[in-house]
Length: 163
Image (cartoon, rainbow, N blue to C red; front, side, top):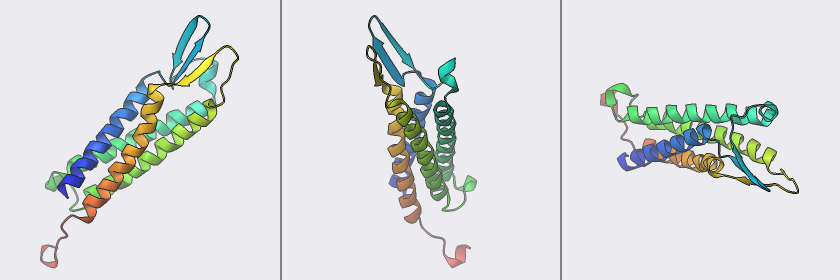
């Protein structure tokens, strides 16, 4: 149980850090044109900030980060027997990690589909590193959830005498 729980904690922490860095930086898209270069993130101001896809991406990314934080927190608490439900910490943490992955998947898919077709004859648009960190957090949360389920299934079960 211990190596799986530790690896789940590592994957969940990495996913959470990647998601928080992606949320807080403004290198989601880079636009390069004749004589200028600009980069933008999720927290736009002006006319672009009113697009529904930006609000969906912001909301689901925040929900993913909150669920990821709960997942990591529950895994940390599962190391302290007096603070966690016996044998349930990794299981609940795994569920939270899967929910975080789902929320981030929705956020990233909406953002990608909205910005995929950006075209201008003199401007080239590229997804940048903050965008990719958001995508990398999805499989990391799936790995954390899977490892949490394995840790839960391999945990010693209390016998009748311990109930």
